[in-house]
Image (cartoon, rainbow, N blue to C red; front, top):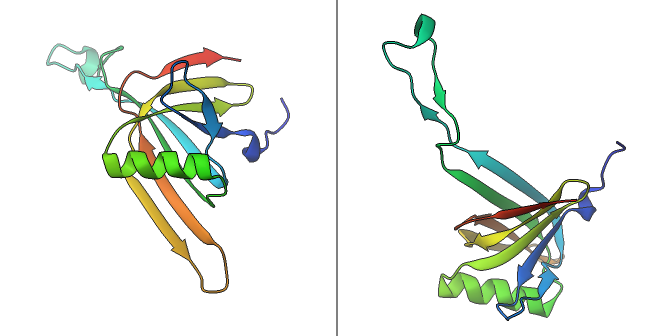
Length: 138
């Protein structure tokens, strides 16, 4: 497989409608998506050779998105800002080319704005999952 362009990885936010329509969170220049699965230690005094044993499929699963860039689209900017101040989860789609799409609720745990006096306004955002995240393979 050839290398993938980072700009092809998309974060889309839902409008809350039915059916839900997703728009790209405009202006993201960098983004990372971290999939996690906490493991549970099941080691006992009877564990063979005193080696650690982990319990399969018992830990908490999570997804976290971190990104930064420029808000250039009024729809996604307004949706994210409104969700942050309301403290409500937003439904996101995370599109990873040649991997698949993750869809589920996320909360905005951090939203930071910055800018130089002779440059553009930028933002940084952190979005941990807040419920069941579905996966559809490409």
